[in-house]
Length: 102
Picture 1 (cartoon, rainbow, N blue to C red):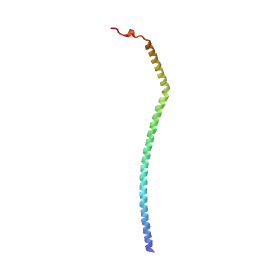
Picture 2: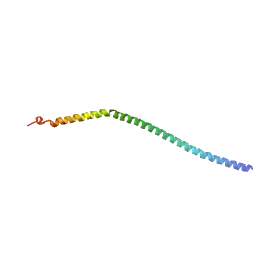
Picture 3: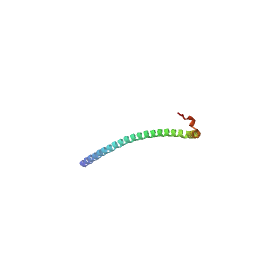
Picture 4: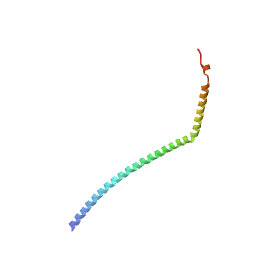
């Protein structure tokens, strides 16, 4: 009976030792994965922050363009009208007086 008890106990100790080693390895892998995941999370959060800042800059730029669109369009229309008037004046002008004769 004692020999059976010792065999069973030794078998149990060996099985539990193997179980401890396996679980230690699994824990080490899980901790490694956790570290990698935390690093990826930090990188992702940094990228999100950079994208958010870029989005804010684009939004500000677009707001400026939209805000001044009517003003710019009016200025362009006035410029086009002034060019048309200048063209009309120059089309009707006689340049004979301005030409030098030798």
